[in-house]
Length: 293
Image: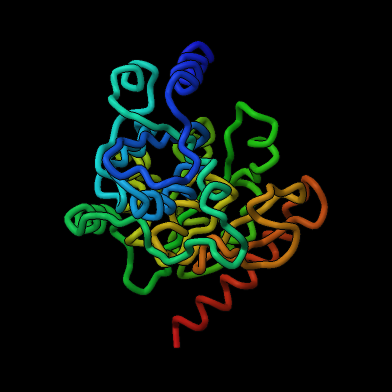
């Protein structure tokens, strides 16, 4: 979305009443996914709590998430997050999605962390099962190695596929690329010895990514949308964090109150992913050994 479109949304939002958490029975509330895809995936969990306070809940969401969010609990109407559709929407109140944790009084102990809160149609899961073509004896692991390259923070979250060389040494593992952006081309030249299957050309949106993830045993990803999606689906996910992390991951610890099935691997030194990958290699070998028994 362009800056002009974003400003148009902000102006329209100011002209409507902002919701502050009160009961809105008999009214229409528009919740805006105004930040990035990671944020939409993480905070859509609040929609059932919003719905419990009143009337009709509309959700404006980014186009790649429309099909995945089609049956999201707590949402009555789903629209694409653009200035044009926003201007035509009929609503009485509006609120940015990222305001919901504050409005609803969230603490570390009251985060709505039941998973899965996103689901995938069984038909889609079956279709992607047929695409995977993996030996039943192999562990199936999804990989995402890059953040948004347009931003400095996105670049700092990026480890790159070559940093995952230690994982290539592990036998009986088939990896699947989940990277669908400028860093996707790296999958064409994976580290020597790594069995990496790249099906991203067949991924149309996050509903497809979700169906693929549902067929995997584990996702290993930097802090990108793929990690949040796996957590929202209730799948095992190991998230690789840069030393300068974001508020959502707190400062220490290898778990997170946001996603019960997620494990965190933190950088010790900024820019150095070697320690992270050594730890991931060790844990992946242990997982492979445990599943082989």
